[in-house]
Length: 250
Image (cartoon, rainbow, N blue to C red):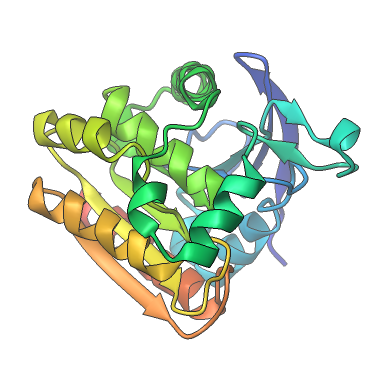
């Protein structure tokens, strides 16, 4: 049975769950940093760590998974245990979904996103320094709001990760992200989205894909029939992608 190491550390003020199967004296070859979505508990994606490590001996021998917890406690807003990277204007989102005017969604720059992304950027840099690794050794991504903040880190904070992973994200602040993408050297992107997603509709996700590809990013896009979630087949694709990148490094 795989022996897992599970610890919690604080980087730049953010609590991070860290999971790997490495011997005590071995540093990882790859960091996989995944950020949870709005309203989820801080450990929402942490269950992926043991699952993915158990799926692949290659990942178990090489990868360290890190799951940062968003800074905003949503308990006072009626979501006990829920966290957020920034507050969401739910009324505005509902209006956009009802009107089907998705251009409005792609133009939104949520208040608090810039501060949250700066905070997370500092945490990621600290995580990398602690592991002795660089952007080229780091897979960065997340689900929903976690995918959005990861996109912002790459485009506007100068990250050039080994891979950007976007589970059910969306295109925001279109003009700013497009300008930043044009100035970015680009990186591989693994993107998935449900065709029946009623929280973050499918069309703006396609717009995000197209914007990234038009600016030199290599996007592997995985649409699926389903709602706002991460299906098992997408996790299997992530495992295969991580294995391919580890093999290429070695």
